[in-house]
Length: 235
Ligand code: APR
Ligand code: ZN
Image (cartoon, rainbow, N blue to C red; front, side):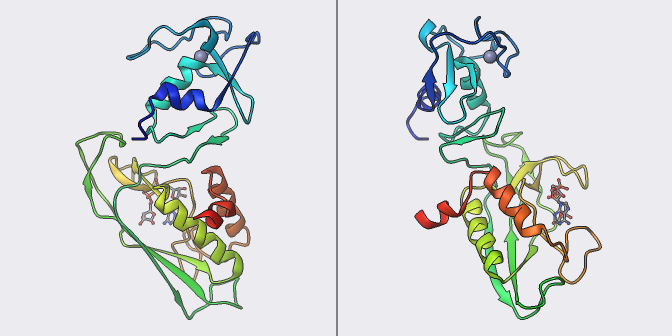
Protein backbone atom coordinates (compact mmCIF):
# COMPACT_ATOMS: atom_id res chain seq x y z
CA UNK A 1 0.00 0.00 0.00
CA UNK A 2 2.79 2.41 0.94
CA UNK A 3 5.15 0.95 -1.64
CA UNK A 4 7.51 -0.25 1.09
CA UNK A 5 8.31 -3.92 1.51
CA UNK A 6 7.61 -5.48 4.94
CA UNK A 7 11.38 -5.66 5.52
CA UNK A 8 11.74 -1.93 4.81
CA UNK A 9 8.86 -1.03 7.15
CA UNK A 10 10.31 -3.09 10.01
CA UNK A 11 13.83 -1.76 9.45
CA UNK A 12 12.58 1.81 9.71
CA UNK A 13 11.65 1.30 13.38
CA UNK A 14 14.77 -0.66 14.39
CA UNK A 15 18.20 0.11 15.70
CA UNK A 16 21.10 -2.24 15.08
CA UNK A 17 22.15 -4.59 17.86
CA UNK A 18 25.85 -5.45 17.82
CA UNK A 19 25.77 -8.33 20.25
CA UNK A 20 22.37 -9.84 21.04
CA UNK A 21 21.68 -10.41 24.76
CA UNK A 22 21.51 -13.97 26.08
CA UNK A 23 17.75 -13.93 26.05
CA UNK A 24 15.04 -15.58 24.04
CA UNK A 25 13.09 -13.76 21.36
CA UNK A 26 9.60 -13.54 22.84
CA UNK A 27 8.01 -13.90 19.40
CA UNK A 28 9.53 -17.31 18.55
CA UNK A 29 10.94 -18.31 21.99
CA UNK A 30 14.32 -19.17 20.45
CA UNK A 31 17.58 -17.53 21.65
CA UNK A 32 18.30 -14.10 20.14
CA UNK A 33 21.86 -15.31 19.58
CA UNK A 34 20.65 -17.95 17.12
CA UNK A 35 18.40 -17.98 14.10
CA UNK A 36 14.72 -17.04 14.13
CA UNK A 37 12.45 -19.97 14.93
CA UNK A 38 9.95 -18.65 12.44
CA UNK A 39 9.75 -20.84 9.39
CA UNK A 40 7.14 -19.74 6.99
CA UNK A 41 6.50 -18.59 3.48
CA UNK A 42 8.71 -15.76 2.32
CA UNK A 43 11.40 -16.21 4.95
CA UNK A 44 14.70 -15.90 3.20
CA UNK A 45 18.23 -15.82 4.58
CA UNK A 46 19.17 -12.64 6.44
CA UNK A 47 22.57 -11.14 6.88
CA UNK A 48 24.16 -11.43 10.31
CA UNK A 49 23.93 -7.65 10.77
CA UNK A 50 20.15 -7.54 10.64
CA UNK A 51 19.35 -10.81 12.40
CA UNK A 52 18.37 -9.03 15.66
CA UNK A 53 16.92 -5.55 16.03
CA UNK A 54 15.99 -3.21 18.89
CA UNK A 55 12.77 -1.26 18.55
CA UNK A 56 13.90 2.36 18.58
CA UNK A 57 11.52 3.80 21.19
CA UNK A 58 10.84 1.01 23.72
CA UNK A 59 14.12 -0.88 23.31
CA UNK A 60 12.64 -4.39 23.14
CA UNK A 61 14.67 -6.77 20.99
CA UNK A 62 13.55 -9.46 18.56
CA UNK A 63 14.77 -11.44 15.60
CA UNK A 64 14.40 -9.30 12.52
CA UNK A 65 12.60 -12.13 10.74
CA UNK A 66 10.18 -12.60 13.62
CA UNK A 67 9.16 -8.94 13.39
CA UNK A 68 8.73 -9.24 9.63
CA UNK A 69 6.57 -12.36 10.11
CA UNK A 70 4.48 -10.54 12.72
CA UNK A 71 4.04 -7.58 10.39
CA UNK A 72 2.97 -9.87 7.55
CA UNK A 73 0.33 -11.43 9.82
CA UNK A 74 -1.29 -8.04 10.44
CA UNK A 75 -2.94 -5.67 8.03
CA UNK A 76 0.36 -4.32 6.66
CA UNK A 77 -0.49 -0.66 7.10
CA UNK A 78 3.06 0.57 7.61
CA UNK A 79 2.78 0.45 11.41
CA UNK A 80 4.24 -1.95 13.94
CA UNK A 81 3.29 -2.62 17.57
CA UNK A 82 5.76 -3.99 20.10
CA UNK A 83 4.29 -7.33 21.24
CA UNK A 84 5.77 -6.86 24.71
CA UNK A 85 4.81 -3.32 25.74
CA UNK A 86 2.38 -2.38 22.94
CA UNK A 87 4.30 0.75 21.92
CA UNK A 88 3.08 1.73 18.47
CA UNK A 89 5.46 2.69 15.66
CA UNK A 90 3.82 4.64 12.85
CA UNK A 91 0.03 4.99 12.66
CA UNK A 92 -1.95 1.92 13.68
CA UNK A 93 -5.05 1.14 11.63
CA UNK A 94 -7.62 -1.65 11.91
CA UNK A 95 -9.90 -3.67 9.64
CA UNK A 96 -13.28 -2.06 10.42
CA UNK A 97 -15.62 -2.67 7.49
CA UNK A 98 -17.20 0.12 5.45
CA UNK A 99 -20.00 2.08 7.09
CA UNK A 100 -21.03 5.41 8.53
CA UNK A 101 -20.48 7.31 11.80
CA UNK A 102 -22.76 10.21 12.70
CA UNK A 103 -23.37 12.18 15.88
CA UNK A 104 -25.58 14.91 17.26
CA UNK A 105 -26.47 16.48 20.59
CA UNK A 106 -29.72 15.49 22.25
CA UNK A 107 -31.29 17.72 24.95
CA UNK A 108 -31.27 15.20 27.79
CA UNK A 109 -28.82 14.45 30.58
CA UNK A 110 -27.20 11.11 31.30
CA UNK A 111 -27.35 9.61 34.79
CA UNK A 112 -24.25 10.93 36.55
CA UNK A 113 -23.93 13.93 34.22
CA UNK A 114 -26.85 16.17 35.30
CA UNK A 115 -25.24 19.43 34.14
CA UNK A 116 -24.89 18.76 30.44
CA UNK A 117 -26.68 17.45 27.40
CA UNK A 118 -25.79 14.24 25.64
CA UNK A 119 -23.89 13.34 22.48
CA UNK A 120 -25.46 10.46 20.58
CA UNK A 121 -23.23 8.63 18.13
CA UNK A 122 -24.87 6.43 15.52
CA UNK A 123 -22.78 3.77 13.83
CA UNK A 124 -24.17 2.03 10.81
CA UNK A 125 -22.38 -0.84 9.13
CA UNK A 126 -24.14 -3.05 6.59
CA UNK A 127 -23.19 -6.69 6.03
CA UNK A 128 -20.67 -7.38 3.29
CA UNK A 129 -17.91 -9.60 1.98
CA UNK A 130 -14.63 -9.95 3.88
CA UNK A 131 -11.53 -8.42 2.34
CA UNK A 132 -7.93 -9.62 2.55
CA UNK A 133 -7.57 -7.84 5.93
CA UNK A 134 -10.32 -9.98 7.51
CA UNK A 135 -10.20 -13.50 9.05
CA UNK A 136 -11.93 -15.26 6.13
CA UNK A 137 -11.38 -13.30 2.90
CA UNK A 138 -14.14 -13.77 0.35
CA UNK A 139 -16.63 -15.00 2.93
CA UNK A 140 -19.63 -12.83 3.91
CA UNK A 141 -19.87 -11.09 7.28
CA UNK A 142 -23.07 -10.31 9.13
CA UNK A 143 -23.77 -7.04 10.97
CA UNK A 144 -26.11 -7.34 13.97
CA UNK A 145 -27.80 -4.62 15.99
CA UNK A 146 -27.08 -1.74 13.59
CA UNK A 147 -27.61 1.15 13.73
CA UNK A 148 -25.82 1.04 17.10
CA UNK A 149 -26.54 4.10 19.25
CA UNK A 150 -23.91 5.22 21.75
CA UNK A 151 -23.85 8.00 24.33
CA UNK A 152 -21.34 10.46 25.75
CA UNK A 153 -21.90 13.41 28.06
CA UNK A 154 -21.67 16.67 26.11
CA UNK A 155 -19.03 17.95 28.52
CA UNK A 156 -15.52 19.13 27.75
CA UNK A 157 -14.12 15.64 28.36
CA UNK A 158 -16.97 13.97 26.49
CA UNK A 159 -16.31 16.17 23.45
CA UNK A 160 -12.62 15.31 23.64
CA UNK A 161 -13.50 11.61 23.61
CA UNK A 162 -15.74 12.24 20.59
CA UNK A 163 -12.90 13.95 18.68
CA UNK A 164 -10.64 10.99 19.36
CA UNK A 165 -13.37 8.50 18.38
CA UNK A 166 -13.66 10.28 15.03
CA UNK A 167 -9.94 9.68 14.51
CA UNK A 168 -10.38 6.05 15.58
CA UNK A 169 -13.22 5.66 13.07
CA UNK A 170 -11.05 7.07 10.24
CA UNK A 171 -8.33 4.62 11.21
CA UNK A 172 -10.84 1.74 11.15
CA UNK A 173 -10.35 0.93 14.83
CA UNK A 174 -13.91 1.06 16.30
CA UNK A 175 -15.17 -2.23 14.91
CA UNK A 176 -13.61 -5.38 13.60
CA UNK A 177 -14.76 -8.61 11.96
CA UNK A 178 -14.59 -11.75 14.05
CA UNK A 179 -16.48 -13.84 16.60
CA UNK A 180 -18.90 -12.06 18.93
CA UNK A 181 -18.20 -12.88 22.56
CA UNK A 182 -21.85 -12.08 23.37
CA UNK A 183 -23.55 -14.27 20.76
CA UNK A 184 -20.77 -16.63 19.70
CA UNK A 185 -21.49 -15.86 16.06
CA UNK A 186 -18.42 -15.85 13.82
CA UNK A 187 -17.75 -13.74 10.74
CA UNK A 188 -19.69 -10.82 12.13
CA UNK A 189 -19.03 -7.15 12.89
CA UNK A 190 -17.89 -6.76 16.51
CA UNK A 191 -16.76 -3.95 18.77
CA UNK A 192 -12.99 -3.53 18.79
CA UNK A 193 -11.07 -2.58 21.94
CA UNK A 194 -12.70 0.80 22.66
CA UNK A 195 -15.72 0.60 24.97
CA UNK A 196 -18.93 2.41 24.13
CA UNK A 197 -22.04 3.10 26.19
CA UNK A 198 -25.07 1.82 24.32
CA UNK A 199 -27.65 2.29 27.06
CA UNK A 200 -29.09 5.74 27.74
CA UNK A 201 -31.23 6.12 30.85
CA UNK A 202 -30.11 3.20 33.00
CA UNK A 203 -27.35 0.66 33.41
CA UNK A 204 -29.00 -2.76 33.18
CA UNK A 205 -26.39 -4.15 30.79
CA UNK A 206 -23.24 -2.66 32.31
CA UNK A 207 -22.95 -0.62 29.11
CA UNK A 208 -24.82 2.38 30.51
CA UNK A 209 -24.62 5.28 32.97
CA UNK A 210 -23.71 6.20 35.64
CA UNK A 211 -20.10 5.07 35.30
CA UNK A 212 -17.73 7.67 36.75
CA UNK A 213 -14.58 6.09 35.27
CA UNK A 214 -15.93 5.65 31.75
CA UNK A 215 -14.39 8.64 29.95
CA UNK A 216 -10.95 8.05 31.44
CA UNK A 217 -11.18 4.36 30.55
CA UNK A 218 -12.03 5.22 26.95
CA UNK A 219 -9.15 7.71 26.75
CA UNK A 220 -6.85 4.93 27.99
CA UNK A 221 -8.24 2.46 25.44
CA UNK A 222 -7.77 5.02 22.67
CA UNK A 223 -4.20 5.63 23.81
CA UNK A 224 -3.59 1.87 23.54
CA UNK A 225 -4.66 2.18 19.88
CA UNK A 226 -2.17 5.02 19.43
CA UNK A 227 -4.74 7.84 19.54
CA UNK A 228 -4.19 10.85 21.81
CA UNK A 229 -5.06 14.55 21.79
CA UNK A 230 -1.95 15.13 19.64
CA UNK A 231 -3.70 13.34 16.78
CA UNK A 232 -6.58 15.79 16.85
CA UNK A 233 -4.34 18.85 16.72
CA UNK A 234 -2.54 17.75 13.57
CA UNK A 235 -5.57 16.51 11.63
N1 APR B 1 -22.95 -2.30 24.41
C1 APR B 1 -21.69 -1.87 24.39
N2 APR B 1 -20.64 -2.67 24.42
C2 APR B 1 -20.85 -3.98 24.45
C3 APR B 1 -22.16 -4.52 24.47
C4 APR B 1 -23.24 -3.62 24.45
N3 APR B 1 -24.50 -4.02 24.48
N4 APR B 1 -22.06 -5.87 24.51
C5 APR B 1 -20.76 -6.16 24.54
N5 APR B 1 -20.02 -5.02 24.50
C6 APR B 1 -18.58 -4.92 24.56
C7 APR B 1 -17.99 -6.04 25.36
O1 APR B 1 -17.85 -5.64 26.71
C8 APR B 1 -16.65 -6.27 24.74
O2 APR B 1 -15.68 -5.42 25.31
O3 APR B 1 -18.04 -5.05 23.28
C9 APR B 1 -16.82 -5.81 23.31
C10 APR B 1 -16.91 -6.94 22.33
O4 APR B 1 -17.98 -7.76 22.68
P1 APR B 1 -18.73 -8.64 21.61
O5 APR B 1 -19.88 -9.30 22.26
O6 APR B 1 -17.74 -9.50 20.91
O7 APR B 1 -19.22 -7.48 20.62
P2 APR B 1 -20.46 -7.41 19.69
O8 APR B 1 -20.91 -8.74 19.23
O9 APR B 1 -20.14 -6.36 18.69
O10 APR B 1 -21.55 -6.72 20.66
C11 APR B 1 -22.59 -7.34 21.26
O11 APR B 1 -23.32 -5.01 21.59
O12 APR B 1 -23.96 -2.91 20.74
C12 APR B 1 -24.35 -4.21 21.06
O13 APR B 1 -26.04 -4.61 19.38
C13 APR B 1 -24.79 -5.00 19.88
O14 APR B 1 -25.97 -6.75 20.97
C14 APR B 1 -24.74 -6.41 20.40
C15 APR B 1 -23.72 -6.37 21.51
ZN1 ZN C 1 12.40 -14.70 17.22
